[in-house]
Length: 345
Ligand SMILES: NC(=O)C1=CN([C@@H]2O[C@H](COP(=O)(O)OP(=O)(O)OC[C@H]3O[C@@H](n4cnc5c(N)ncnc54)[C@H](O)[C@@H]3O)[C@@H](O)[C@H]2O)C=CC1
Ligand SMILES: NCC(=O)COP(=O)(O)O
Image (tube, protein in one colour):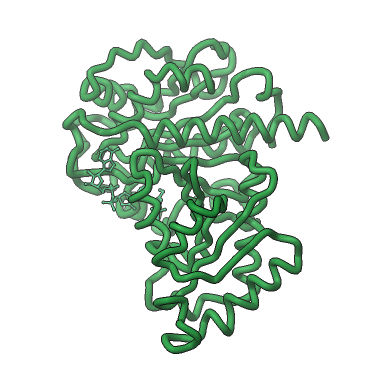
């Protein structure tokens, strides 16, 4: 619940430091140093000072970031970012380029702390630098992905989904982190209609007044009239028709290999794909350095770069901050909009 006027002041974003074995320390340092982020948001960064300083060194930055206590960081004022030093990871215990229990414990602790700040009304949004899911699972055995963890930490029982966001187009998925072999049987008319409705609501919450959504088929050539599978005829077409009847601006299904070309040419705001990589490959080719993963449907915005921990370049000082910058800016925009709507209600 947004508790104060994030419309007039910069929203407070709780930024959890991610996996210490990859590029997260460097990215966190780079984000803190960006002037456009200072203008857009007041960051409350959560992690370990020694790990952050390692990242700043890799990035060649001198951060000059004040620490503040977790229980009263608000007293430090909002004129500059602050750091909550949980002092919980000795850099000597970090194995760069490796998923470990220590790394997962560090990241899950930071994430849990950030989520509780937002859930308690002390932050307007949460962002994080990349987590490694294997490390997260070492620390928290039920860690399928962020949605499950968030639900466990704040007791959220509603429907939340992951979106990939670029300025030009969004990608929503009917299925996400499940084996490919299970995708076809996971599709249903009701499930697709629900995804379309949530996608429309999330696009609106990010400022798109009249969202247009285009839907991909599942099979090659969208089944080619039933030649290569019938999910389009049996499930996806009826779902699109039902969504249209409910007043959503939706088109499809179209073949997945050209649906993104259509979306860009015909100015759709989002593509709904049937499974993870059907959308991710296209999105990462369109804008890897700007891609954001946004978890929609939660009581507060939750954003992270769409790329991962990049173990292969950890410690080299060459991590691109572009996607992280977009993640923070999207979270700030969504928080301001939520505050404006709540003030108007
Ligand atoms: N935001 C998050 O928390 C995300 C976490 N992940 C997790 O990250 C881990 C590794 O995922 P991968 O599939 O290997 O993908 P990855 O995105 O970590 O790496 C893929 C390639 O992109 C490069 N790359 C990634 N980010 C970069 C950046 N900022 N600047 C320059 N080059 C960059 C890497 O060096 C690598 O060559 C997995 O555990 C995955 O679940 C994946 C996506 C998002
Ligand atoms: N931690 C966020 C994340 O892993 C994004 O996952 P995906 O969208 O790449 O599957």
